[in-house]
Image (cartoon, rainbow, N blue to C red; front, side, top):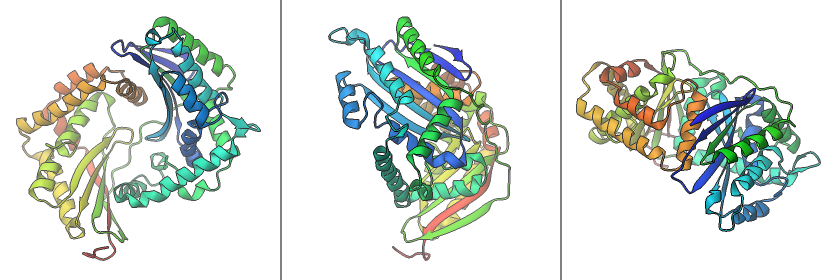
Length: 427
C-alpha cells in the first residue's frame, strides 16, 4: 500500500489486492458542505450516474459496461461531518482475464474520468431532461422519508442537536428546494466541486504500468480544470449542554426515540478501536447492554442500539418503543450508560463484544468494496493510515479502562420523541 501526492489537493493511494480477479478504480471528491448548495450536491450523483459525453444516456452507459464484461459503475454522495464526499467507482475484470486480451483497465479509467470530467451537457449545462427525471427521484425520496419513522426521528434529533453547525446541513437535500433546482445551478455546483474539492484516487488491483497510466490520465484531466483546492472542515465538536427534550406527534402506533449525546473531549483518531469497542459494549451489538438489558430483560423496546460518529464526536441511541414506555426507555438507557461508566464490566461481556468486532475486521479485505471503503474512511479521518490488520491488533489491545474512559466523555444533549397523536392511541 502506498499513497503519493499528484498535485495540490490531489493524492493517489494504491493497494495490491492480488487475490481478486477484479480491480477497482475510485475517485473521491471531498469538500466543505455549504447550506446554499446542499440540495444541488445531493442531486449531482444521481445525474452523473446517468451517463457522460461518450455515453449520453443510461442505455448507452449500460451497453458500455456490458461490453466491459459486466463492469460496475457507481456514483455516491455521503456526509462526512461538516464535509461532503462524492465518490465515483468502477469495478471490473482484470486485464489478465480478458478473453481477447483487451486493455480493460484503460477502458475503466477512461469511462470513470468521462463521468467525472465530461458529463453529458446540452448547451454548456446538464441535460434538462436528465435533471428533471432525477429531481423527481430525489423529491420522492425526501417525501418518502416520513414513511420511515426511524429515519424521520433521527433527522429531527440531528436538526436540534447540530442546530446551525455545518455538520447539521442535510446533505441528502431539502425538499422545499428541489423544484427550484435548474440545470444551470447544478452545473455551477459541479464546477465548484471540481475546482475546490480535495481529490483522492484509490487504485485496487492495478499493476505498476496500469497505475502509471491512470495517474497520467487523471493529471491530463486536471490540467484543464482551474483548481483552487479548499481545506477540509475540521472535526466538529458540539458543546456540552443541558439535556433538551422534544416531542413530535404523528398518526402512528410505535413511537421512536432518538437520543443524541455529545462527546466532551476532542476525538482522537488513534483511539478509534476504543470507540468501536465502547459502542459494541453499550449498544452496538447483540451482546451489548442496551440489547440484553433494555430490549431483552426489561422488554420496553422493540430495538435499541447506539452508534458513534467520529466526524462529529457524537453518539446516537435509537429505539422503537410503545408510546407509554418513552420515559422508562430513556431512563433505562441512561442507567445502562451510567452503569458502564461507574460499575463493573465483566471480562466475558467485553470479550464477546471484541470477538464480534474482530470478526468484522476479518471480512473487510474479502471484497474490493470493503477495502476501498476502509481506506477512504481512514483518509478522510486523517492521522496515520492504518491497515485493517493494524486496526485489528489495536482492537485486541483495548482495555476495560480505555472503554470506560470513552463512555465517560458522553453526556445527553437532545432527546427526540416521535410518538402517537394521543398517548396510547392506535393509528
